[in-house]
Each structure stands twice: as C-alpha cells, then as structure tokens.
Image 1: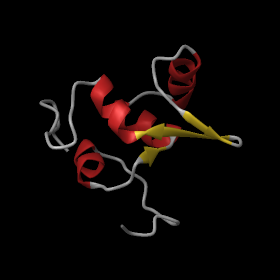
Image 2: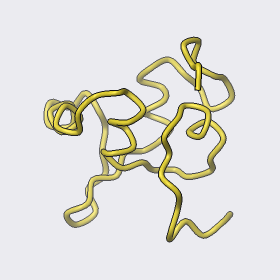
Image 3: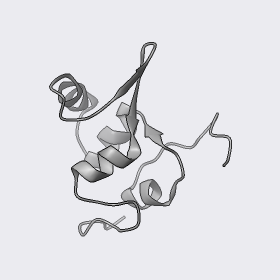
Image 4: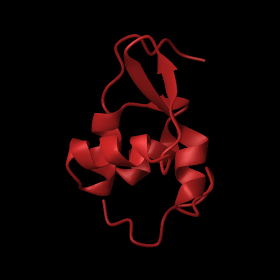
Length: 82
C-alpha cells in the first residue's frame, strides 16, 4: 500500500479503476460525473451517495460508489472514453 497523503486527484474513470485509494472526495466525484459539486452535496444529503464523515470531511467510499453505477473494480464502464 502506498502513502496517499498527497494524492493526485482522480479525474477519469480509468484513473478511478486503476487506483488503490479507497475513498474519494466530493470534487473528484463531481468531476467523474460531470456535475456541479453542489449536485453531489444534494445526493449525499438524500442518501443517494454513501459517505463517511471524518470531522468536517466527507469521504466517499470507492467500492459503493462504483457499485451504485453497476461498475465493479475490475471492469471499465461502457461509456468510458477517457
């Protein structure tokens, strides 16, 4: 396992599938879904997106996020063009 203290942001589905990071932040998820971060905030509030709260930080577990879109950690989404 590597130290992700200063991890590069995940910007594509390919990067998401290739990483060993277990959590994402809301900005990364917004970038992946091509939506405004406020849309992610609303999805978190209504329970659509699962989060772990660590103080004021909201961490989005990678595996449940992928599962919500029918993607497992070993496959690529069909619409991935990145």
